[in-house]
Length: 73
Image (cartoon, rainbow, N blue to C red):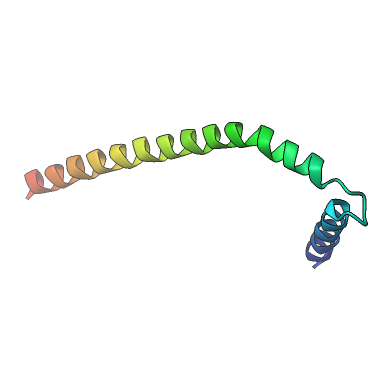
């Protein structure tokens, strides 16, 4: 419950910081987002690549297990 309340407080503080009447950090937030977007895209691409490779390995393993079961019977 504490974590939920603290989470709402932190989100509210971030929104207030970005508002013009608050701290007015919106321009800095946009600069940060523009800077981190290519790095974030690269990480997402790597994760997708790893998931794809693991999926292919799982399919190969499943086929081997099916062949082994068929050979047993």
